[in-house]
Length: 592
Image 1 (cartoon, rainbow, N blue to C red):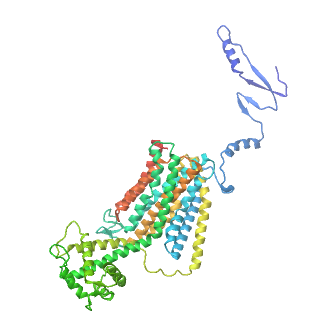
Image 2 (spheres, helix red, strand yellow; image 1 turned 90 degrees about the vertical axis):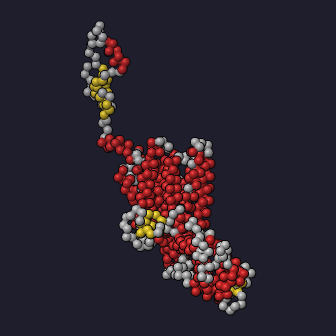
Image 3 (cartoon, rainbow, N blue to C red; image 1 turned 90 degrees about the horizontal axis):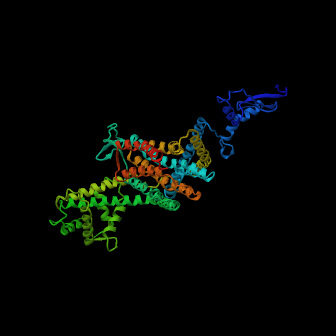
């Protein structure tokens, strides 16, 4: 049969039922017979050959079909106009661009904060605004990571915020901390690094840095700031699902309370430092007077039984009482203090005399009688005795405990004076009005850039994670802290390289302060997101890394003020250890 010219003949194999009948017919009793199945299609229909579809559509239609899958997987432009891409190289480029803009935002915020601090001084500005502004870029990124999109989208993107939070903390306490020790190393003598003296090269034990006691206090505060992490992990430890939402709320409240306490401490810290330093200087005066009296008494202020010798002290009182009226006036005590010549400290003689009178004058008449002088000297001797070391006292004649008291006071003064705020009034800043305007503009510009760039940066990280199948946590853990902390890291390293104890103290104090703000302010933003949006807290491995690094480095810095070079190696090695720990716990042990 010949098909009509307007029809096309297509040969096919038939249906499954027909092929079964043909198979039965091909048995030995039924020799195979040739069969052909055919159907007629109009010329306007699509051709079908052996089940394969061939189209006669136009080239434009075919191109449209090829592009259809790309349209379905296309990215969504942030704000409706910012560029986006689904390629690996394109997303790397966008992360680099947005990361650079975030770095500039952090730089503007840092410069504006420092300029404002120079103009207005510490107090509210240094204690409240500076810590908050320093953590603003991180807080912005954490906020937008879980704020946009549906609940499912927020749950997938919030890992970017946790990666930034953990990565920023680990970066500051490991690589940056260790680098500051390396670039700021000086020769260590008598357990103290000598300023601007670096002759021992890279000796692991003979070179390093020293800090003041206030830096140790900052490290202890940093350790305390991890309490909210412990609270939010309680349901996971107990393997409970019912109390997770409540644990997030409690941790959020504790974070906000710790943030308020930390800011208050930062505000009053300069006052505390001045009070502590004034007390230690007063102890220097105590030692100077006791040493002077000991020399005048030929080394014998105590009796054989160790009690103060009243007769010797009365004779010394008479020597100081120049007019012989039986009372010591302000002028007579000032002559005594000036004659002591305490060259180790910059002493305000009038202030020292005022404190001596406050110690001795129980009658409150601004004069010291003989009995008051004896009682006051006895109290001072008892205070000096309590500072004796385990080597013991060498006897009432030599009074070795005075030397011990002096060494203890000198060390305490050295630890406090390094980081204490200057007591003299700061010089007036030239063009204060213009500098204030400049500072405010820098702060506004940094804030606007951080707010505008945070969302597209998070989107680029999330898109790059989807394209490469690399978990978003690891990308944000490694890349984002470099953008938000680069300015702080560079300034800290440059500051530490000045090879002075004061600059090292300020550098490490700022590092501990930044981590503290991560643990209270940034974590509070993250917890608020989780609580308000009803997200699942499933970051046990990440929290464990933060706890390990903060507690190890915090405990290490809380009880010592000198860090040999080998400590930098330990700190830097904690960074790859943290990455490996998260990977093993999440992808080998299945914690997430």
